[in-house]
Length: 447
Image (cartoon, rainbow, N blue to C red; front, side, top):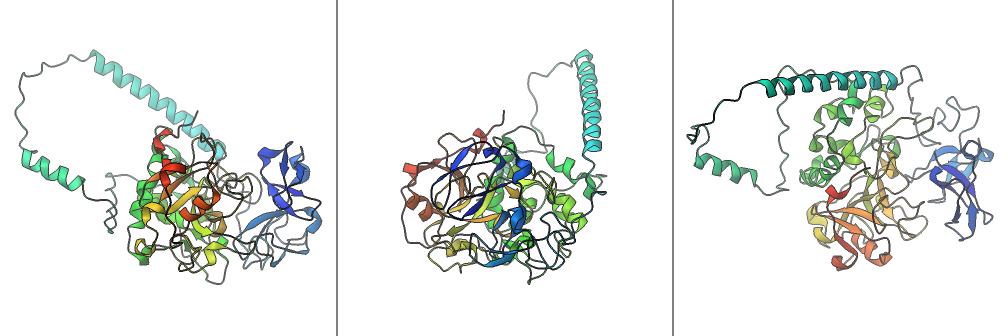
């Protein structure tokens, strides 16, 4: 959970708990600040602003009005009298005063983690025994002799094989939605309570994340009317209270059944939707980052994403790139209310970064707004600015370009180069081979 730190210059910011006991420079004045060793005494109150930014307010501001550190607007910090208390929104608030309350479920219906772990362990043991038994039986079974020459199968002629090869090589990003794979016969639909175990069982630490670029490419090839960066249930509520663009990406990553469990007609905080949002999606996670679930009340247990959509460049304190029209020179691919189409990218798809790492500010993948859409602001890849990829040699961030290619932007990159990559019509030309070399997602392997 973030630790609230105050500087003598008057600025406050939320530091990641990994910084406990360390000294870091104040993002406003540069003075060194000591992050407290006790997270229990430094926890703040979760507050979100209409501009889409969220931060932790100190206990001294409980029940009082203060200014948003991103846009400068006035917001209300929840007090002890609020029905949900402890940093939760009041009845007319959403994460600190922004709309109707999100009625998060009580503690009784929590996901039975211990039961799921026990069931997983028993299932794994049974599976190992079955595999071992089958292997022994196959080893003891006499092997039939293989004929010297095999007649060609009538089911697969050379002409048919050539036709299948031709169809499998169809160009990517053709603009049509690929049909979902047929469900196996007699396969029962998973319930919302089993969503976590269904989506988290993947083979190989590097295989899931390597599927992200292709999934994004297929998702982006849909007709524009089907693309939504924030899927709203009530237009009057702020972006953070709605479903993120990553929820629409699930069917293109092989999670159609999980996607079907969402009730998009109900609030994001409705019990069924909260349970689905707790499912770990391996394609959203960096294997080099072990921070995979939100820690602390009221979002405890929600699954995180290590990748976010790029909204453009934020060159001033009160600029939120996701709220700019996509025709603005500072705008990127993702806005809160629209997603720029391929034909809108005047700078070229291969020159435009569409997705970047979330750095030290990983948020639940199900949340919209600033949780999953961010703009580039200096200092780039800083622990408090919300961009970057943990564990990558050379620092910086792994980015997915609008044409589906993947590159590594060095931590030492000239900020002007990265900002130019984040806009769709800035008019710049970038020599990507210098500071954004091609990157193979398969190289992201956990310990």
